[in-house]
Length: 275
View 1 (cartoon, one colour):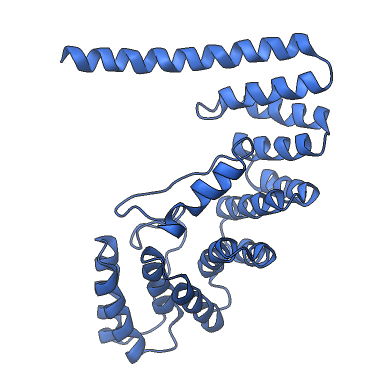
View 2 (view 1 turned 60 degrees about the horizontal axis):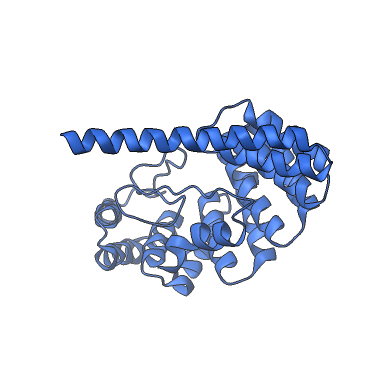
């Protein structure tokens, strides 16, 4: 499905040396970052209505969505909207169903309606930004991610949104703007991933010493998913400034991590074989 894989396949494939795209799949395999409607650590938003029938349709829609019954879920949200047409959450939830059916036009309209009814509904901006990106409207995607970041009440979530905006800027070869974004993200939530992304942008601008500084700081976090890549990229940066001795050491460390990883995999396979 288009939206289900667009961040993984498009951003990761096009920028494979730059980005790591997380995939958050639980009850239903859905687009990276999308979560079951009943399990969202950040966005716990109840529909702004006391209409019991509308709320019942909403709950039924949520349950059907979580069980991958999108068309049935849409029917429930339709009924909720008929009863309460000014509740943003109903449109937002229906938009998520359209996404799963690859109906981007309908999803975009629902997210836009949710924003119109509730301008601070930051998840709707996030979803709409993804559709903007899929349609090639990169400037619109940046604006929507910016709107989402400004409205998010959680600084860790805000940092993640800003990183998404930075990825778009890098995709547009606006690495200076990506660095500004990532500096904000680092200030909000300093992680190996954010430092790596900023280091990559510095590398793209041929500011190799700054890239090395970010890679070095990121390596201190000893992230199991990023460590090999960080050593490899720092080796590339060292080579650019003529420090082939340090580059050689980093490549050796990167290889050691890969060898250790494969050793663990082979050990597990051996254990399974003996069972």
